[in-house]
Length: 428
Ligand SMILES: *[C@@H]1O[C@H](CO)[C@@H](O)[C@H](O)[C@H]1NC(C)=O
Ligand SMILES: *[C@@H]1O[C@H](CO)[C@@H](O)[C@H](O)[C@H]1NC(C)=O
Ligand SMILES: *[C@@H]1O[C@H](CO)[C@@H](O)[C@H](O)[C@H]1NC(C)=O
Image (cartoon, rainbow, N blue to C red; front, side, top):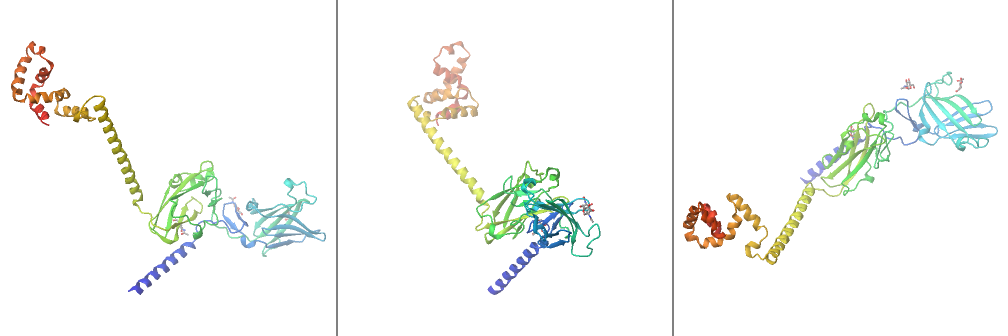
């Protein structure tokens, strides 16, 4: 029985691994290439020339040969020696061209000798215009690329025309789009390309179990911002890490460079496991490849759903307790005040007793009950004769005589009609 279970478990693990692998190898988004030797063509498609780095092209000139080492440098070679015409280093030195030129590469910081006055002391520089396919003059057909033409703008600058069979254009990159952990940073996505470390799940850089959420900031070029759509989140393994996307970024509000939209990733561990959960966040962009990146989240223990509810009840309990203590204090304080200052005693000295009696009076629909209560004792003493006397006085009420009576019996007279309820109160 146990071995069957083990076998089943192993089977499930295999299926899970297979599912993971098949997921991992279907690239639908654009990760930044491993090298800086890439460019975006005139329709934002990625051309990755990483395999071409260092590829050498030589052009036989009259005085000097020109040698291009792809994505590295340009130099002229002659009897006098090598002269450096610039080096390739930054990614924005490789851009889309115009007209017959598909791409342009810039090379800066070559030999300074006799070129000291060039802009920013950049020395000799070169520009390589790349044509995908064959040279315009039909030279070097059918070969693995060649230099078509070299012209010197000055002794300090060379313009070289290079024909190569270009790479097949890749996915369309949503240029200018960034995602970062701060409003002005772009660790996760830069220029529409997912940066290394976020292009696939990396288990070494997981968010800890304790971290309840992470805020991401999205920016886009204002004129293209409305192409950004609602992000979609997928977790692997499924259903065991609850992930909610909140914030302006979650609703698909167009992010701009000036006002980044925020994407709050709120997560809670429903099940603990040894390896981190993989969170795939995909932001669809109309007409472009979706922007996709991975975050990983550790779940060393389970964060139960009742966590918040428990906290709520705890708060309620504390507030109730404070309320009770305050009530007791006020009650005692009031009692002491009334007994000492107002010289009242017993039940009368209890704070709120006047209010309570006023309430009772309202409920029983009478006027002046507060007063009658004070007279209650006296009246109940005279209980036996109460009715009769009340009646007498009632009849006497019609006469002017009653007004000359002392206040206490007069009050009893005024209340004569509802004596039974009065008696009830007196017997309390
Ligand atoms: C990530 O999620 C998106 C959208 O849900 C999906 O299309 C894509 O295939 C997923 N990527 C991986 C590598 O699982
Ligand atoms: C991009 O360049 C290709 C030739 O390389 C050209 O046919 C196409 O019209 C250009 N597209 C735009 C939008 O400039
Ligand atoms: C060489 O390039 C220059 C300028 O880039 C151009 O005027 C000239 O026609 C080109 N020559 C050939 C043979 O292609």
